[in-house]
Length: 180
Ligand SMILES: *[C@@H]1O[C@H](CO)[C@@H](O)[C@H](O)[C@H]1NC(C)=O
Ligand SMILES: *[C@@H]1O[C@H](CO)[C@@H](O)[C@H](O)[C@H]1NC(C)=O
Image (cartoon, rainbow, N blue to C red):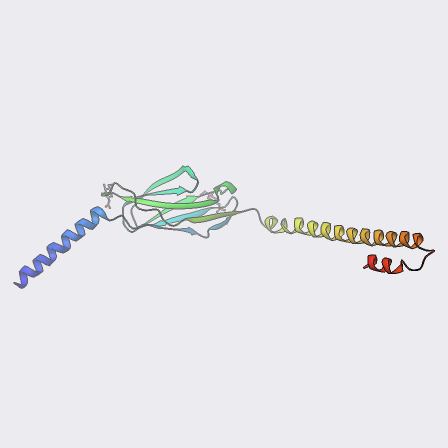
């Protein structure tokens, strides 16, 4: 009776496993960049796709670029894609997927890895402040000029109204009001 029970349990597990292999999708792989996902222009980077199975075909794709596809066979659980002499247009989101020898379908895509290609040393950091500085100078000059112009016009208006009403005393209150 015990033997029967174990046998049935085994059979059930085997059937379940068989079902899983047929129906369940392959686990998603994960993608990482070495030495870093932020690299300088003209340098190299290695994108590593970690798959859950050995002996798989791995593909590397790029977001918004369906024409970009690299494929390789991996004997281990890791596939390495070497990207050399990186250019600014190589920056963007990458993902990988794999297919085992047994399954003819592809696994789900890995998470997206954002590759950043920085410009040469220093230049990228120095450029941005300049426009903001000149903008600040322009704004300051513009504000100063506007305020000066306002004062000059107020002064002239005051002078004109003073001359116009120099003979009479009462309108002074009007001047004070317009001055404020
Ligand atoms: C990048 O890889 C190429 C070819 O593998 C090599 O010739 C070059 O020296 C490498 N560049 C750097 C910066 O490591
Ligand atoms: C890997 O899969 C291929 C078929 O794609 C097969 O011929 C080969 O024997 C497999 N290698 C290993 C180590 O399992």
